[in-house]
Length: 202
Ligand code: GDP
Ligand code: MG
Image (cartoon, rainbow, N blue to C red; front, top):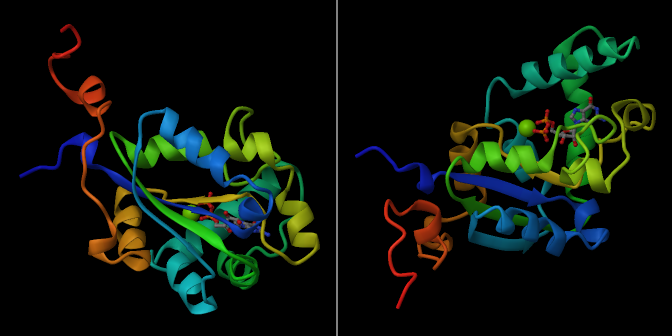
């Protein structure tokens, strides 16, 4: 049977900078208030292996991320650190392992209609310098590719969020056992998803 839209899930990580800046509650409330449901949650210090596996679950990630970074340099009229996407990504991955293991992170699974796209929209674009105002990355960070690359570190952007439903499925399985994810109904689900909004009047 085809899954209903409301059953879509996505993985979110509040990265070490987000935890250090006391943004856990702010982040959770932004996904909560849009109507998404929290179905998994843990506080962990990841190992470097887990971080590398997380970012390379998608065999295309190295190429795509390198190309995205090179393009963002060129769009700003700047020279990228290298013209080879894989070389660019190797550096990014090294930085990510250091960054993501530097302290506790909060790993969460959010469920609801269009969970992946809605979470990406609320989270904002990868580079805080250009992420939209009103998004988490746009509102709470001021980092840039240029500044991070000059210092040889990862862009600190508070959040990881899955990029597609397929990426989400792989990432959720990477961080959670099946029995750590809960299936339950919230009272508000009826208002969000039921065909008839019954039961309001006594
Ligand atoms: P996301 O899906 O928006 O998080 O972005 P990506 O999957 O493309 O990249 C993963 C993470 O690597 C980002 O969230 C950043 O922390 C970091 N990152 C990505 N691109 C760059 C870059 O060009 N330079 C640096 N220093 N870090 C980057
Ligand atoms: Mg990504």
